[in-house]
Image (tube, rainbow, N blue to C red):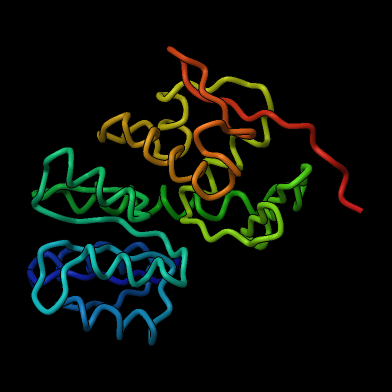
Length: 233
């Protein structure tokens, strides 16, 4: 089985078409038609990824995403008729891993599901499991980050961004490089997504986000990670 997918949309034709495409590719699929049912299905089904519409009865997709992110880092693809930049940015700040605007091709959705799942699971296949610095620890296998003495909750994308930067200390990454690596070359969203994720990372791991110790801005180019790595005993 390729994985478990929860589709949440109040349009039955979208659920039906997407389900058939996913099942044909070997995915196990569960569906919900409103936000409250989505959370019930999530708890019962334990999906590997959620395809989540925004405009729904009972509870909208924004609230569902917030609820999921309270305790889980399951990848989320936002699926909506809203196409404005502010809506894309807001979805990504909630922890969404991708964003598709209706109308869309089921084949495009299938490709995005595969890409998100591949990126999500790829970090656990690396050789080093734990990266440590003075005051910062990244556990790749457990997908855990400890800043100071506190464990930090992160979305999948925030963790992947931090790990990418931390694995290449002092290397400068442009925004386009980060987007292509983490979201894929087919991503059509705004580059400001990177700025938002960097800001949220700094708020979570830096003692003073306005004067960051770890994640540095390289003006006019992008970002880099600074820090001398320690050996884990």
